[in-house]
Amino acid sequence: MANVTAHEQEIVNYLLPKLEAMDGVTVYGPQDPAKHTGVVAFNLDGLHPHDVATALDMEGVAVRAGHHCAQPLMEYLGLTATARASFYLYNTKADADRLLTALQETKEFFKHGSIETK
Image (cartoon, rainbow, N blue to C red):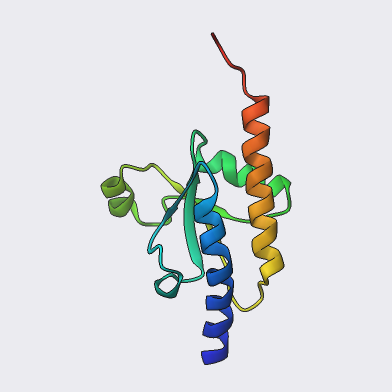
């Protein structure tokens, strides 16, 4: 189990700073990767988490969206939902990169695909 935990932490150490550095992404939970697990909740500004999850799914990246059975926490944070990626033994840094790339593509799609009014 120590090896499993070390592998998960290696991915979190790799992913978390990159995810937090992305414009328009809010990551929930500890910002210190050493205090964060492989379950990473986040939102993309201006998009509902269910839309983010659908867009990521279309890019081949599976995440969950919703309140994750934590309605009191969501209420406390003033959120209706978050998207959540989970990394574990079977995931790699390449999976983390696919999430980051798919998030960037999702941001660009909705930025350029949205209807702007003047």
